[in-house]
Image 1: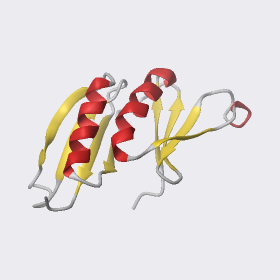
Image 2 (image 1 turned 180 degrees about the vertical axis):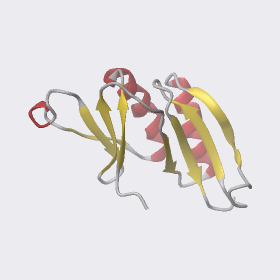
Image 3 (image 1 turned 90 degrees about the vertical axis):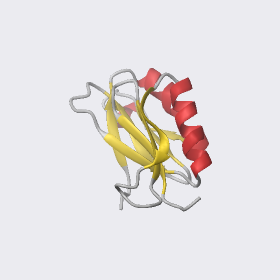
Length: 126
């Protein structure tokens, strides 16, 4: 279970533009920007559906991260993949079944502007 997670991004505005488009098919959006007086002047923003659960923090990424977001349907996985590529992401695995995880694992992978491996996954049968 994940309560929240975050990644460091080298260009906050470029990453924000990417995630604004990529998250929309999953029903998520930027919900909060933390005031600069609480962050030491760096940009920090949180995405989610009802509350922020995925955070971007401006800085120098040191390692590439893998984050998987739940999709409500296989169609949403496709929409995420299309939106993320339109937003400038790079394909890292087209939408499809990944039965080596389990029979109904349907996911798609993209690399964000910093090379983080971002996934949308649906665990429901068709």
